[in-house]
Each structure stands twice: as structure tokens, then as C-alpha cells.
Amino acid sequence: MKRSAIFPGSFNPFTVGHKDIVVRALSIFDKVIIAIGINSDKATTSDAELRAESIKRCFEDNPDVEVCVYSGLTVDLCRKCNVFTLIRGIRDCADWEYERKIADVNRLMDSRVETVYLQTSPQYASISSSVVRDIAHHGGDVSEFLP
Figure 1 (spheres, one colour):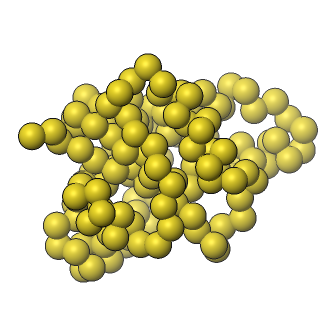
Figure 2 (tube, rainbow, N blue to C red):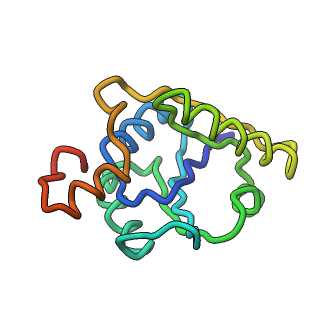
Figure 3 (cartoon, rainbow, N blue to C red):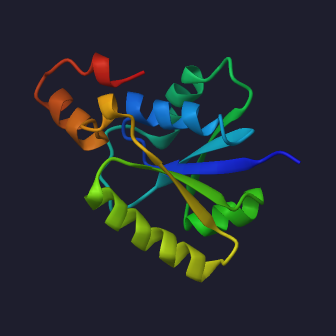
């Protein structure tokens, strides 16, 4: 039986930090599903399908990485995929508090859902999608932050 996990997020954009989490998760799981959630509360700079295509290109040589777009609850995606382990990257204490609350609610909705936290590698701890978007918005070079 393959050990699979879902890495959900908006990935707007998908950064080198996100890629690092996926690569490291593959040392624990046989398959990682990068799930791009459509969140109506978040402003996005690109269409989810375009983000999915970009992420697929990052992992085109790795059959153990799958990319999908979904809307609705992450626990519903878990049920649909029959995968009940979520991966989340943690940069700092604020991330931990936020992610812990989401993990608690996910488990209340479906007791099979477990969340595995991977601490961000130190060289990526300051990188976030919102920071990258802000740099790009002001005409800065974001190439070192994107895979």
C-alpha cells in the first residue's frame, strides 16, 4: 500500500519553500498530492489552473507528485482521494498557531484526517507567497524565490 499525503494550499505563487516541503515530504510518503484550493476569500494573481500547470512542470520528472485543483473543504478532498494525511509547512510560531487550529477543525470534521508538519528549511523561512507577490507588484525580481 502506498503512503500518500495531500499538501493543500493556494500556492499563489508556488515558492522554492513549497517545493522544498514537497521534496522533503517524499522522503516520508510514497506520493504527494499538491492540492491547489480555490479560496474565495483570498485574492489571487493567477488562475488556479495556470498555477497547477506551473507546478506540474516543476515535478514533470517525478511520477510521485500529483497536482490537482479543488474547491470546498479539504476534508472532502481527503475523502474523495481516500488520503487522510495532510502536509503543512511551518515557518514560525504564528504559522504553528494558525495551522494547529485548522488541523483541529479538520479532525473534528473527520477523525481520520491527520496533519504532519514539516519545519521550513532555514534558507526559506522568510519566504512567503504574499512577500513574493508584493515584491513582484513593485517590479522587483522574484526569480530566486520561485522554482
